[in-house]
Image 1: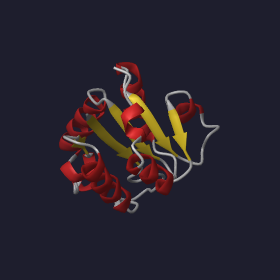
Image 2: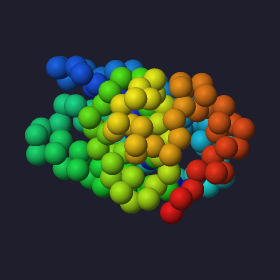
Image 3: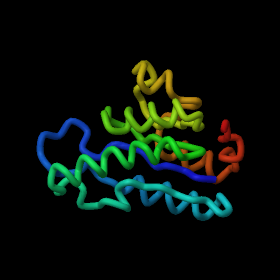
Image 4: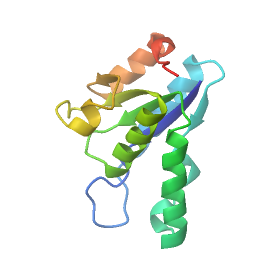
Length: 141
């Protein structure tokens, strides 16, 4: 199973700082522990200094990560805050037929609501779903 970890990085910041990315470590750890042979794509793990890239490299990175989201079987979108980048990754994954699990309180936001197959309220609920084997139901392609 190929899982793409999407989620808030900068949110509505107007500087080159990131929101906490600790959720990515928690998701990665639980996936590796409970999902046999999982392949994980985590844009932050691949590009931890991406916010400091020069414009050309940043553009290539953004486009390539959005395309990689479309290659996943499952996209896990962590959205405690709105994220335009995550919305684009969700859209590409949706168009490609991936199973999308959104972790967000924004159940009325159309970009989240109508591209997600499942919505969970918080990160702990996602962790429990993975630990309890619900990930086995997360296949559409």
